[in-house]
Length: 563
Image (cartoon, rainbow, N blue to C red; front, side, top):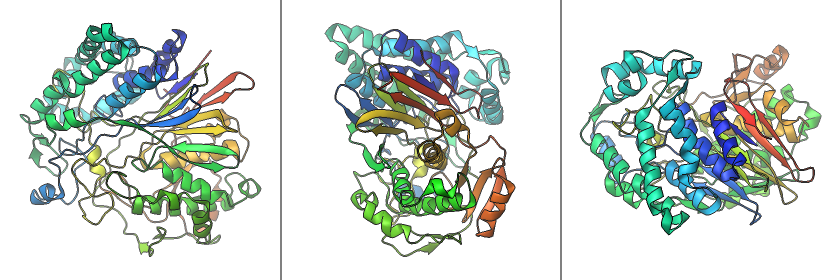
């Protein structure tokens, strides 16, 4: 069974399973395909945290797919050039691409197929084309002016014939196809020395060969204007690329009502999901009633406490001592739970072990409308994969000529305040919002799930998980239920805006519930009935030998497929 945010990527993953590949092979095929199909929300030069349940070893691993800041990126450099925040676009917020390395790492240790085999569907999509979706047309249309006026390399790829491609027209990206055919050829030449040698050769082609060389040449010869109107070359160097190597890590996890829930570490926002579970475990949610005033108020106040800790403590653990042993303990959650007032909404930011502080409305600019993809796979052996790839977006950085894709802009998540835990430091990984989820039960593989959505990912998926576990909904019912999220805490993306007390709710939440939340002091903002959340999920039932898949209908293109 596979799920992804685009049906053609799901087809690519299913093809790998039908050809005898495993869940990791399927996941890699879907990632490559998504970078072709949904380039406004994911690209080859982006990021990709991956969680894998390895059936043969009966353990869960996390693949760290977040690249670091360039060695030349310092707070001093940005201050000297008049920046108060790192811009959300251009070359300055680029970090070393981590996603390609992450999928090479996953394939090397846990996959079975060659890179050429898993890239085959994506190369076909790029070279032979695919129908333009309404989402792709809208994304290109929003960028049309900038492509024409500032980024000729992007216009060449995404304005074929000098115009925005229309829905239903066949779109091709021949440069992308040529780039990754060359990667596959680099692998093929070394396969006589074994599969590992081939994968390493492909990795070297990207990080210590023609791809890195072309990227660095472009960003050091072309100046890119950013949101502040400044024009700069990039800070990344060949040395940054050559020295980068991702790694496989132990995930973090907690028990919740008999389920073991795994997330990537504090270089993602993943632990915030676990902190919310620990807080909520002390309440009888089922007795409160699904999406009742009491339940949603309790959920919101627990989320505020957990996200306050994210803001205060989460960062690259290579640079910061993140006290996860405390933050994820049941004892800590029990103390924090006492702060929840059942009748009143908190308007403060209240991190643990610190004094509460007031929040300032806004953040000096409008956040760019960007997003992410999601993919999951489970195979007949019981291997499970969940990944939330993103970055390398075509709206925020120009296409690198000849490669067919842009750099990412993840460094915008850093702060230029030396006292902030997420302060910019050379070689440091920004704490990404990307956050796949994996669950076991009674020591057996149970479920993988995730969603796009930035700061909202571990809010929307949490509601899905509670819908399934506490309220007994099946996967599709749990995904389809109306959702909410809060914007109470400082945002991860530029301009790091906070909206104290704000709760966004789908209009399928009954009016009387919305009014009840407002009476407790929440600032309720109503949006369309199917606007929030794009969750995907797969459940593995080892006893029955059945795999269940589900996909949210909210953006029309996600799909679950299996046989």
